[in-house]
Amino acid sequence: MANDYQSEEEVLGKAYDSRLMKRLLGYIKPYRKYVIMAILMNIVVSALGPLRPYLTKVAVDDYIVKSNYHGLLIISLILFATLLFEAAVQYFLTYYTQYLGQKTIYDLRTQLFKHTQQLALRFFDRTPIGRIVTRATNDVEALSELFSSGIVMIFSDIFNIVWILIFMFFMDIKLSLVTLSVFPVLIYGTFLFRKKARESYRDVRLHLARLNSYMQEHITGMNVIQVFRKERAEMKKFLSINSDYRGANIKSVFYYALFYPGVELLSSIAVGLIIWYGGGEIIRSTLTIGTIFAFLQFTEMFFRPIRDLSEKYNIMQTAMASSERIFKLMDNQTFIKNPDNPIKLNTVSGEIEFKDVCFAYNDEDYILKNISFKINPGETVAIVGHTGAGKTSIINTLSRFYDIQKGSILLDGIDIKTIDKSDLRRYISVVLQDVFLFSGTIKSNISMNNDDIPFEKIVEAARLVGADKFIESLPRKYDEEVKERGSTLSVGQKQLISFARALAYDPKILVLDEATSSVDTETEILIQRAIEKLLVGRTAIVIAHRLSTIQSADNIIVMHKGEIRETGNHQELLAKRGIYYKLYQLQYKDQEITKAV
Image: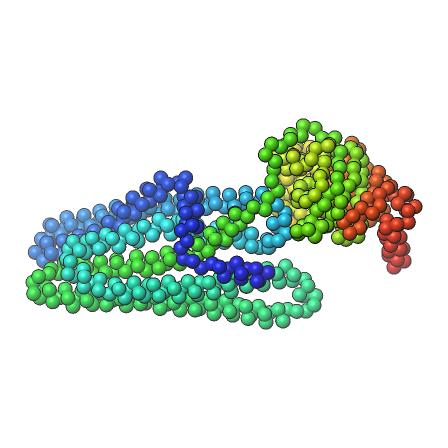
């Protein structure tokens, strides 16, 4: 996985990409009035800044030198009023730019999450979850800084420089040229800094990707590390990766540590030139002291936005890298597409038919090979076979989590590819072996926050599966808090909640994928009793390793290496003495050994 991260990061690092910027600006378009307001306020604020040195020049030359106290008081009040007005405009500018950034990021994150929800499971099979989470959090947050502090504030820095130059050249052209004589060196230094900063930035991202990948993998597998006492060895590897990351950051800091003092040095040289040239002009009475004061302030103000622009460059570079990754995810078209004119399902009886179905997760490596069978409404059909036989793939294709390559799957005689996915899945409830519970309450996990399911129906579903006994014993009962992935509940309790969740939706088709394999015998008996009641009038597909749980099924399909090898009820299959008979014998022997132990 580390290589995946690295290969993705290596293509990044461009400081500006017009294609990406055009897409990013599309998210600002709905809020263009705020952008226009911010730019106008930027022009005002940028003009008010250089106005202060000019007022200082007037105060010195026209009032202080001439000992005009009254005039000095008036110019001081004007200067104070200018500062107050600038502060007020700056407040609204900051507010609107941050507001713009947050609104834009809200829209982007919402669109990203919506797109991710629509992606097919095939995408999640091939993409690390940590990477997807990073896209919606870290990368989107990097864009937040661009929208709120980058794009609009770049205008502020540029306007600042322009207004300063206007005031400087208006006051004295020669002194302006002397002051700006260090500018070519500044431009060269900035160009060199950008090049080195981009290289170091890429190194930092590469080593950070390695660090994130390593930590995610090893924290997830911490139990294996501790079991095999590999803490010390893994710590050595981590120290090496962490050291590389530290080194890359220090190298990056080195360039910044070189650039900022360099800008300060050039600023000091400019000040020295002003004093040297301006002082000589004052001696020759061709320049006033107030002008020198103003230019000293102009110099400080001029180099400040230069430093800010270099920081904006860093923001821009980070944003370009993040947007590249975000748009790569948003451009992914791994969808299970809905038909253009879907057939509406008004009622469903529950008839299911597979006709010569072939399915592969990758290319033509078929997991299901020419699968054909029919389930009549209200029938319970069990599917058994060794691991990898293709049992779960049948469920995945029935619910259109994956689309088949050949053949057809019919629901009440209608090809499921002609039915809207949401409409199809409304009639199917699935209970998986690996139960996933969300942070919330028992109640919200059963109803999945569906307001159409009343509390009475939630309680009834829990009662039918036998979950009500342990729920009622909890301090807050159905409002009991559920931690992440249901960490405070036992495996059996989580399984019962998932079963109640499926039943609360009152499905026409009930699918149980190893639904009782993780529960104890007592809980299994409760579920089996509930199943007997609930399967009446419903079509059911049961996948189970425990053959004792499916003996009453109307039909049993035995799969082997993606093909149907045997069909029949429990007694018929035992009489054939084929694959099912061997599976049954193996489990019977295992049970005998367990009892003996």
